[in-house]
Image (cartoon, rainbow, N blue to C red; front, side, top):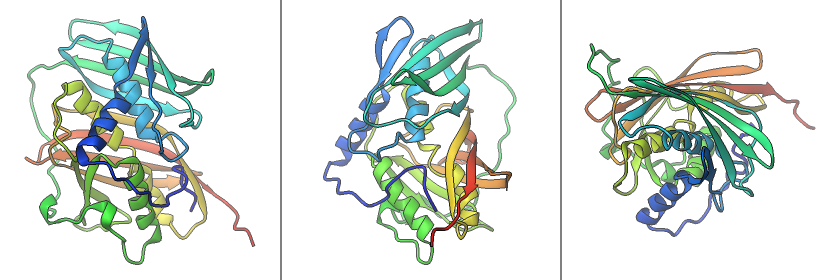
Amino acid sequence: MTSEYGDSQPVQDDRTDREKVDSLLTLLDVRHVDKMRFVGARKIGGIGRVFGGQVIAQALMAAAKTVAEDRSVHSLHAYFLRPGSEDHEIEYRVEADFDGRSFSNRRVVAIQQDRPIFNLAASFHRMERGPEHWHAIPDVKPPELGAPLDTMKIAGDPEATHMARVAARVLAAFDIRPVRLPGGNLTEQLGFWFRTRASLDCSQAMHRVIVSFVTDISLLSSASMRHRDVPMQHASIDHALWFHEDMRADEWMLYTTESPRAGGGRGLGRGMIFNREGRLIVSSAQEGMMRIVERKE
């Protein structure tokens, strides 16, 4: 199976946990150029093609920098237009479409080498009181009893092992511990605990940006892994997130994903992120291309 993340060979990373997390913060904290224009840094020594979670997170940070601090992102909807290259920085152009009493809306276009590669619409909300309910957290083992993903070789499943290698390259700042979900398995219903490898002293906006970065790692995999014996090329098409309450990216969260449908050359993944107390704090969805390719003799 061909991955949208390029080469998955393991790499040597001798940085400390603190250095890995600080590098992630630097990558995601876009710099202001002028008015509503921002620039996102390159990821040095990455995977060649820009990881989708990076452009999602950088675009969201650019939008957040133009909104009042008492408003946090509650939803975003994005489309991947062209693959981005790690050889160049990415420019983010923000449009302020609306600022009301409680909500603000922003549109962002990511530009690289004078071509749009991604666009995003995000809505921000000043927290208000309201009725509450949420989906129950699955009954899984706590993260302390799990093995780190970057040390695992998932027996009998080369594609799952491939995902572990990819995660080690693009998510080096995170401690990721897979779990087996009730009624599921590692290749059809994915689940893992995650948190940054070092503590964070940052805004709630950055915590949400960091979590958005992680959400791109397994949504499409939950669809494509169900057909892992089929030679296939896959890549993300769109991405949607809903942030339900405040969160800390340096505390354990459980991310579960599943795929309700694939067909017509596309696959759909849905996900939920729970905090350690069992509250549903983020919902996600992504559709991706799943194109069958002919085997070469």
